Length: 347
Ligand SMILES: [Zn+2]
Image (cartoon, rainbow, N blue to C red):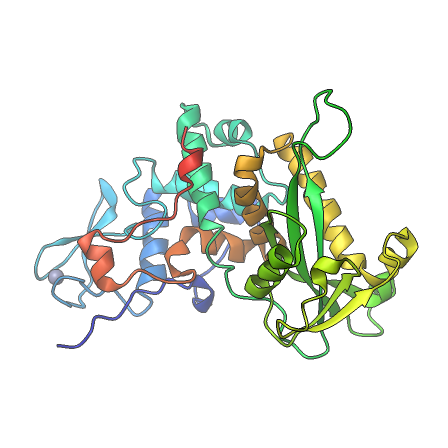
């Protein structure tokens, strides 16, 4: 017997699907649950529906009262459109999920659960909170590959203390969390309007992780997981980065990085990323507890890496099963596929 083909919902491969470029377009394209269901069906079966039970390829029956369900013409068994996505088993209408994913993807600074509840007109705060967290969980998965690895492009790496209010306990780092960052440095084409700012340098993809301390083991471990070996890495001259060559990287350490002018000259992009991150965390979520910080770092990373492509973000959120590892056919229909959830965040 032939092994079943996994369903891969990498929506970026579906260039033929129309995509809204504005809010009015979004409303025209997704006016109700049926429209969302039709979109999802096209997303999953580009070449037309294939029944997972009997492999029949005929157009399935659609039930007006249950837009999320397709019924096979031949074997009459049902297939759920949202199986394997963050929307599975949710009682929230598809159109609400689409609207939610659109808001999460297109609102650059992100949104609190209260704002979200109001915008979507959801009666219960807990429902809004859960939708938001499921979409956020979806932001974790597509970005696990390592950055760097391109010739003529280097990666800046640095670490910074994030968050934490000292609440009258004096100065220090009591409640702060150490975060390591790696960011690709790209160059604009000479002669373009923006090539004069920062010598035409700008940020490519970013990786962020909570690390336990500033030791070579912690920082080196972070770099191992975040950056492709062989990449040129630029850091300050902190001893924690001294072992990068042994780990297989080309390493350039900048001395005197305590001097802001030197830091700005040689590590400008990563300082911008940290500044943006801190502003985002404070402005939107009024500071974040250490326990939840990694989830927010993942959300920031997801947004940052798609900041030029907000609609790719939307499509990733809706079709998230195609992120890194799509559930296999068997997993999808035997119920063994588990969604990523943020267990510590469930209210
Ligand atoms: Zn069938």
